[in-house]
Amino acid sequence: TYTTRKTELFKADVSKAGVEGDYNHYRTVALKSTPDRAVSLLTKDVMDALRAEYPTFNIENGDLGENILVGGVTFDFFRIGQRYKFVFPSDDIGGESITEDKVVILEITEKMEPCANLCKLSYINEESLQPKDRIARCQEFIRFLDRYDGYRGWYAKVIQEGT
Image 1 (cartoon, rainbow, N blue to C red):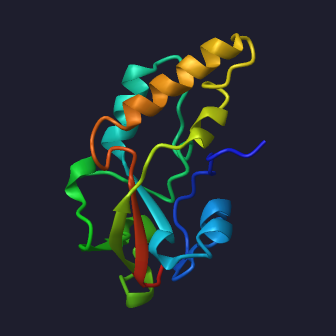
Image 2 (image 1 turned 120 degrees about the vertical axis):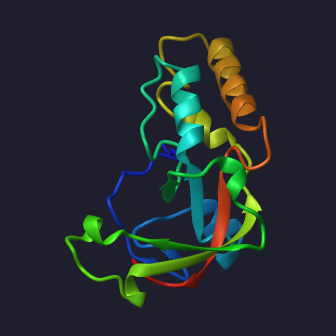
């Protein structure tokens, strides 16, 4: 029953260990909780492209397991080794002023690779399909996400904790 699917939240607390309430079994067990994969980023342009390519799949934010969905930049904006500051605009936090506890700084550590867990999404692993058709659908979906470096998303470590 494991899937990459995450529930979409308006905001979240981010610590050196990652996003509060998130759990990544592979990172925790196989990679011994490496801080280099504490947060995953995906850009909205990729989600828009997926929805255009697969209009019947009902793809939702969080389906690919991203911790942060980033708008306003394209997938190739991010660079390994670079640091990025994430801030809620004051309009989005009820007029509150922006303080250091509301700022998160992440450093990109590596590009994400599409993994077979994506194939467990209900619209990929559709029960009405024959097994060979499910496999073909999965392979096509993974190929789509592997078309460019960083298209699947990016991993980052947390430099500054915040919300």
